Amino acid sequence: MSQTIYTCLGQLRKELHITQADLGKKVGTSRQTICAMEKGDYVPSLKLALLIAKVFNRPVEDVFHLTNKKC
Image 1 (tube, one colour):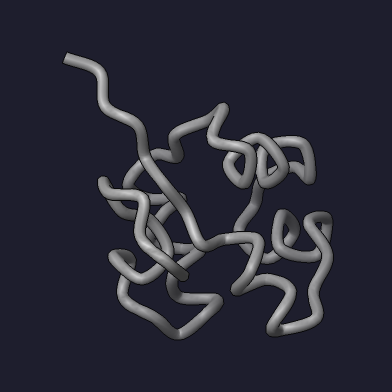
Image 2 (cartoon, rainbow, N blue to C red):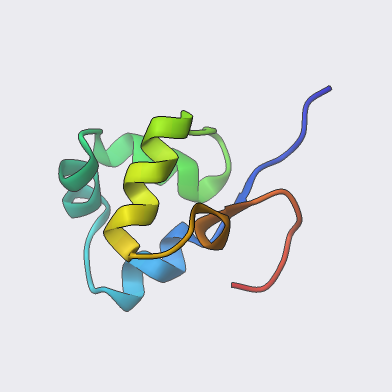
């Protein structure tokens, strides 16, 4: 069963005034991967999701979720 993963990644990134490339460097991935996550085309590994949440100092559930909620 496939389920969509929704994200507030773009909004959180913009709040910190960091680019996709900057975030990618902080978590050890590419700008293209960050872009794909923001568009919903790529589901991150658990490790990557946790690293991203740590950058924003938020629980992973604030960055990634199973329902399309307001960010």
